[in-house]
Length: 244
Image 1: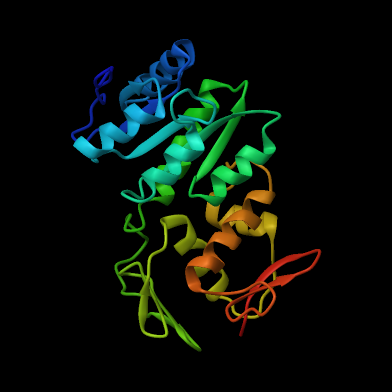
Image 2: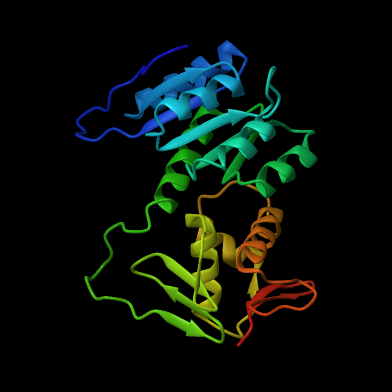
């Protein structure tokens, strides 16, 4: 098992990235670019080792993990990881493994990168996901935002908390941002590309179908239904809207 490989240049709090892939050359390539960008990087060769690592010490900022690995593949590793941690995860997949990508997203991946990839693309994705995972980053002013309240749901923006029928709901940072975007404009229809711009950012490289997967996960967390929507309605051929 490899220990931390990088140090942040000029930083007092380096962000720690775990790279999990059974192919050593890919691990080293990704790690070298991350280190050059100022991250602290650890490398592991399989999912079992990654879970053991989290059991010992969960203090990591992000995980990059291959789907196809021996002992425990990336999807099963992610499924187990989500029981103990909400750390952001970027999956590495082969270009032909669309089903695996969608399954990975459905069990809690934040993003994916298809092989072969540019290491610079991986670094860019890491930065996007880390920004999204920091809901309390400085804003243009210090005003306290009023919670969004609709029938049966309260979205407390400053506390990053959601209540459905007065019961707390556990959402990832991405799910929260997606819900907030829709709920801030109830009744407005958002196309997938508009949600990507607002939630993932204009520098997102992936496919628009990622929106459908995360809306499905969000509905599940809220106890909502696509067939009988209480909060999020599908507008066929266009996108989604928050039920006013």
